Length: 404
Ligand SMILES: NC(=O)CC[C@H](N)C(=O)O
Image (cartoon, rainbow, N blue to C red; front, top):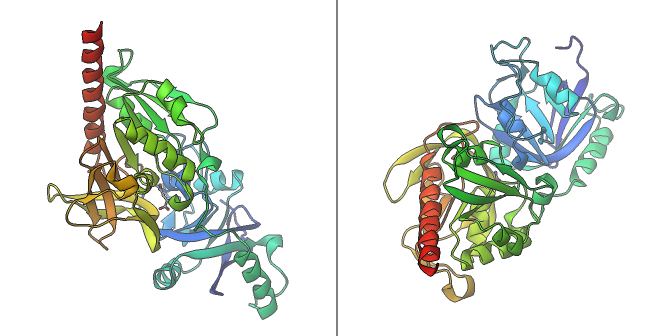
């Protein structure tokens, strides 16, 4: 905790400005400003690689209350481009805490701002849509800026407008692992022959995702974003998984080409979030940018097949443009991948939240069944994937057995 905070400004590309005080590191940062409504899980949020190049506004008014620990991060570093909080905790209190959250952010150089009206900011973003923004504090503030001098603010707005836009951004390669690694089965499956071999393409993967598969008996080969179809096939997987990740799915051409190859081989496929958008695109549907996206851990989603509602974790700014209602023939290549249905929709705004192919073993969801942080309502989707991959493994071993 610090006693003296520097002045800070939050400046949006449309000229909206809020004054506050420096939080975490001082200096300057730019990115797309979004808001996240989770009341818990701030460590999981800031370490989610899908937030790369985004400044995250926490709508929960107190951040840092439970400190920081080494167990909750979802990746090896903090990815958010900046953090906006109403009121930093003055004292961390939790038996799990091993340090302060703000200290952790500062050590990793994350520039933030606090003591500003995050409710007004969130309403502004809901009205106008998410946009680029910058946080400026300490020596990054030009003279007169805190007095809202027009030319000083103009300089900052110009800096914000020079930042790259999220639309069109291809960012998965910037967050993906550079080296392949393996997550072995855990729990009751530890040390046993894996039930299945799964290749998980890391487009910004969260640690809980391979962990969920490993807990169900799979051996998970986590591979870099630039992995080719031939490299995936060489690992002889029983199924392929595409993770969440930052950026615009409309720019992920390499991934879509690889995914079409995976689907054409009949390999079982499961995708989460970015992975759902890429399945949509591989099948020939479009994607589009939402006005302000879904980010939080209490988003209601309807499973259209069962009529059940799941309360789920979300972090997405783009969505798939596919017809909700009757099944449709996937438009790609004259329908070579057969029929598809929108399996899940958001009960807040009707946005497509899941896809299921009816003629090939592929499905995906726009939300986060790995639930880190968030409710565990959707964990059964990992069971569904394991059923697909183990069924294929059994069918394959029977064929090999007959051949032998
Ligand atoms: N969490 C994710 O995978 C996000 C996917 C994509 N970058 C979006 O914002 O919609």
